Amino acid sequence: MILNSLSSFACAATSGFKCRNLSRVVPSISTGAFILFACAIAVHSQEKTFLGDTDDGSRSTVVHSIKLYDEEGGLIRPDNSRHLPFSSRQTCGTCHNYAKISTGWHFNAVDTVRAGERNSEPWIFSDAETGTQIPLSAKGFPGTLKPEMVGLSPLQFLQKFGRHFPGGGIGEADTFKTAENYLRWYVSGNMEINCLGCHDADPAFDMAEFAKHMSNQSFRWAATGASSIAKVTGSAANMPDNYDIYRGTDPDNADNIPPTVHYDISRFNSNRDVFFDITKNVPNEKCYFCHSTKSISAEEESTLQHSEDIHMASGMQCVDCHRNNLNHDMIRGYEERATSASLSCEGCHISDPNNERPAAGSFGAPIALHSGMPSVHFKKLQCTACHSGPWPSYETGQFKTSRAHALGTHRAAKEDDAPPVIAGPVFKRDRSGMTAPHKMITPSYWAYQFGDSLQPILPEKVKPFVRELFREDSTWTPRDWASFTEAQTGILLDSLAAQDSTADATVLVSGGKLIKNVDGMLVHASHPAAAPYAWPIAHDVRPAAQALGVRGCDDCHSIAAPFYFGETRLTSVISDEKGTTAIMAEYMELSPTYARVLGAFFIFRPVLKVLLFLAVIFTAAILLVCVYRGITHLLNVVQR
Image (tube, rainbow, N blue to C red; front, side, top):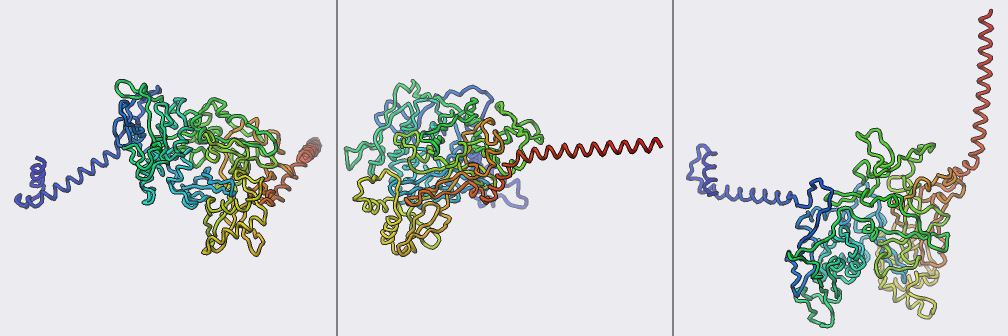
């Protein structure tokens, strides 16, 4: 029927063209029409609106009593003897546009750095025994290395850092599955987006359990094992490359327990649906698992725990400011990324008369007037310089973060000085040229040098030489942060050099320098790879009463104020260089002399104020005398 219609259409549309020729033309028309029809279907499918992606305006909570599907789209039945974990792509993707969601900020770890995008916290590849701490970023922030440069394939990266990774992107894209590890990916499975990690309000959802399964290489089972509806036993890491997840046994070793799902049958109703307590507004506790920071003061023996962020103490949620649309492109809060006028510090606290409607004051935020503060501060300083992070001290403290120290997991190190060493707050210029507080890590690793580029030496290749060096030292333990004398450093460099004769040199990156052993002497040189990597501190935010400058200009402007002259200790594995420091003024790209002279002026500021006041009175008195004489002279002239 379609063919006849096309024939009639062609006859009507062609003049001076005999219909008998349509026997040749119709197949071509039919083929073209079919292609156009297929393209129309494809476009329509791409623009498909999912049930959960539209808002009808109701502020009530949507009840999620849903069916579970495995990664092949099969319905999970509680009475099956062999269970597979549920798939977020198949289960959540029934109602939500999974493809669009997967482009979000948390899932685009391998995307290139966007224009204006500021540095983010890196993944830190660390090993205490060899003194290794390397900031990693698949996005390629300046000062970081790509994971593959330290021998981490995407699969190994997830096994090491997946404990605090939300899934998607590198966890499931086929482009990251190379031939040499394709079979391992088949065993471990994809790390799909862990939707429940953020949106499941059930307090029984255990991210520490999720972290355990990720370290066991059980990627496809991790979210299911962390949920309250099932428990997962076994480990994919113990399974051979030829393990078949559908057969469920290790053909080479029956004693190895394969990953196995044990669903709580009582959670399934008569329709085989499972209820999830899903919330659109993610609770703070969910954010804290990946974004907690513990601050350790360098000036006190005990740990100083700072007050909660003023926004949290006021009852706000992280997502009140860090919002996102369906694409999950999270607003990070700084001006370049705050797409709405009210979703940045300035947008919420500074009234802008140019806005079509008032935007400041969201959530009852006070309007900051900054009375008496010179405007130059707003051109040189970020809001966070005065309001965020720990109060500056004469020696920077140390931070422990979720991602760097595995906080919240069963294997997190409890010691305050546990490596890697993250210093802060460090007041330095950011990419916009303004000063802000930062966390900072000093790269430290052994490497082979080829021209201007460095190839880090993996800790596994360095450890045998370190252990031989301390073989007779009963006080040495591999858990301690590495500390070598200059002589020991030279020995290690020579030992590693003998392992690769193709390298131009064997070097140590440590203490902000590139170190070589030349004729038995350690030579220090500057190198971009040795420069510290820093990322801005946004929280915890202090209220105005605790901001820098609230007690007066001396908070920052004096000849020895920590804001300019606090010292940052650069991490080094050489024991003789433990005191290597740099001051804040250097990170602000200011001359220390200039900062001291500027501070000295503020010593005499009270005197200058008195002198200025006296000068104003004296000048006013002179003016009054002149006015009096002028009026007197004028009256005398009139009387004449």
